[in-house]
Length: 102
Image 1 (cartoon, one colour):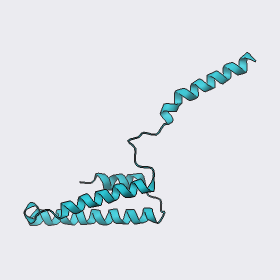
Image 2 (cartoon, helix red, strand yellow):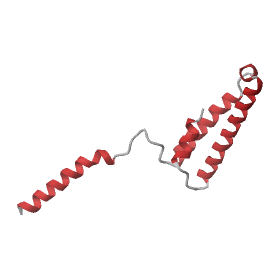
Image 3 (cartoon, one colour):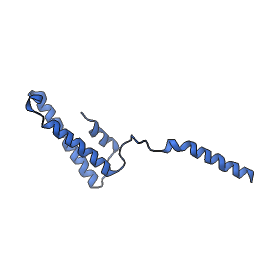
Image 4 (tube, one colour):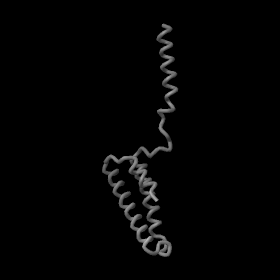
């Protein structure tokens, strides 16, 4: 009787020790599709505000290039949102890349 009881306590101790390692990191990527869509929509709005800054802030060739980059990012975000809504699998790295792009 003593041996199975000791084994049970040992197994429980190991499980409790490993529990923090198994817990999800609260700073990790959003796990739900809805959370991902909300973050992507917020990023798209942020890009839209950048796109509509005064002309003086983005004049010249550099301004045109930056404007095109913003539009490309917005298209990528919209495509990703559509894929999420369609139930397609989206790698967390894709979402993270678009959220952190300049």
